[in-house]
Length: 349
Image (cartoon, rainbow, N blue to C red):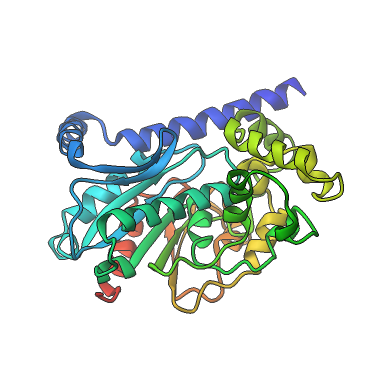
C-alpha cells in the first residue's frame, strides 16, 4: 500500500513539474528572450482589464480592441493561464490573425466543480460585454471563439449547450422553483446547472478534452486527487446553507454528503460527464477537436497519457486532427497550426 501511494505521489509531482516547465517556456537564450517578452507583457498588462475575483476571472490582455473578435483560452486541471504562453505568442505574431482577433485568457480554481467554474466563465464574458459593448453594437462580440485544453474544454462546452433539467436532476428530483434559500445561494446552483447557450459564442476548439472522463482519475488516484484538489470554501458554504434550508428529501444523498471536486467529475463515465455528453452543442456553434496521442502507444491504447482518444473524440465535430504529443500539448506546433487554421476559417462578424 505504501509503495502504491508513493507511485501516485510521483505521478502527481511529474505532472505538476511538466505543467510548470510548459508554463515557464524554453531555457537558455530562448528562455531569456521569452522572460524579457514576459516582462514587457507585464508592463503592458497594466492597461489590461480583469473580470472576476482574486481566484477566478477573465483577463483581457492589453486595451480592449473594438472590432476584433475575442478568442478566450481556458486552461485545464492544475494549470494556469501561463500554460497558453507559447500558443499566444505564436498567434499574436501572425499579422493576419492579430488584425482580426484579440486574445484573452480565463483563470479559475480548478478544484471547484466543473459546472460552477463554467458559470464563472459565463459571468465574466457577460460582464466584459456589459463594459465594452453596453449597447450591443459591436458585432465582433457575437463571434467569440473558446479554446479549452483538457478540463477547460468541458467548461467551454457548458457555454454552448442547453441543459434543460438534465444537470439539475443530478442533484435533485424536485423542481428548482421549489428551492428555498438566499437568492445569492440559489443563483449559485441555478447558474451552474440550468444553462442555455451563450449567444456570443460561435466556435469552440477542444484540445485534449476528456468528454468521457479519464481512467487515470479513478480508484486510489482519484481519492488522493480529491484530497489535494477541493472546492473553494464560499462554494461549499453556499451549498451547505441550501441543504440546511430545505427538507431532507430535497437533494439527493450524494449531494448532501459531500460536494464533488473536479477530480471526481473527471472520473471515467462519471454521472456528470454522462449527462453533459448527452447534451448536443448548439447548432449555431461550430466545434473542432484536437486530440493528442502519444506515438509510443499501441493502436488499441491510443492516449495522450491522461486522456484516451475514445474520450476526446466527438462524432459530430466539424473537424478533428490527431497530433503526436502528450497531454500537455498546447504549444505543440501541430496544435498551434490547427488553432490558427480554425481562426483563419472563422467567419468575420
